[in-house]
Picture 1 (cartoon, rainbow, N blue to C red):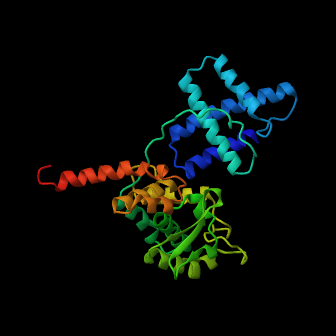
Picture 2 (cartoon, rainbow, N blue to C red; picture 1 turned 30 degrees about the vertical axis):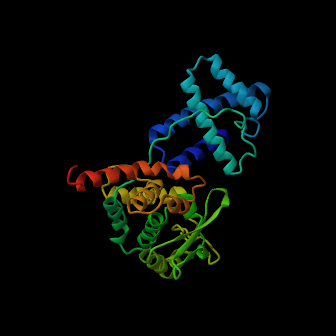
Picture 3 (cartoon, rainbow, N blue to C red; picture 1 turned 90 degrees about the vertical axis):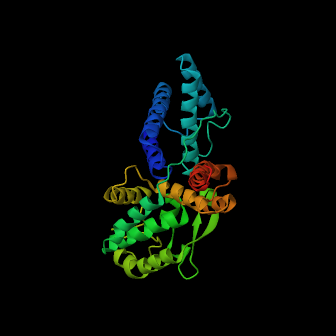
Length: 302
């Protein structure tokens, strides 16, 4: 289970957080090294290797092990950052109760700026399922449109139940990190697309009439994060987009395009479900570049 949890975490980074292949490879190496340490210690003690048996004392022993192996301070900082992120995930998933990194000082690791796609690229992407009339394509159009219309995390979208959407009042209710509820308004076009999916398509995909999930797969079960990622990947390829597009890319694009269109930072913070305004402020760099280009293009003396 130790290695399986690492794979689940890496999949989460790809689908939910939109981390690059290189970043995920670095996380894999760092966490595999930690797993090796845990397995060696467990074998020495004659007990099964597990994350639940890895506490704060074991974490300190691991850090001492890294120091004895003469790793550079920057390398240790990177490894600790990866481990912290992993244990945050494990607690959120309910696999462990306490983080063994609780008293480990957090290294300051810079995070790369979000990489949105342009409005024209979003439109090209959304056009792909609209070209087809199969039940799956109509479902896919509703999903991708809703992702871009709301800025929801992929985990929030696949967790939606049928009663979380009100197409008449034009809003969707989701539960974000910490099970915090938020209500997101949606525009008329996506409300109509969802209405058509719910009334005409979803019943054709269902096998169990008691299924509550809004979006279901071809087996009639709740669609998974990985399933949605694979669907999006296929349409991005058809749209001939020149960069990797993940569900998180649409979230970044939503935020960037809202701010570029004149939305205030507090409103975007609320729509995204960010606990702190500082998290949302990362997008102001991107919109500042947009303002600069507009200024240079428009000012007679620029």
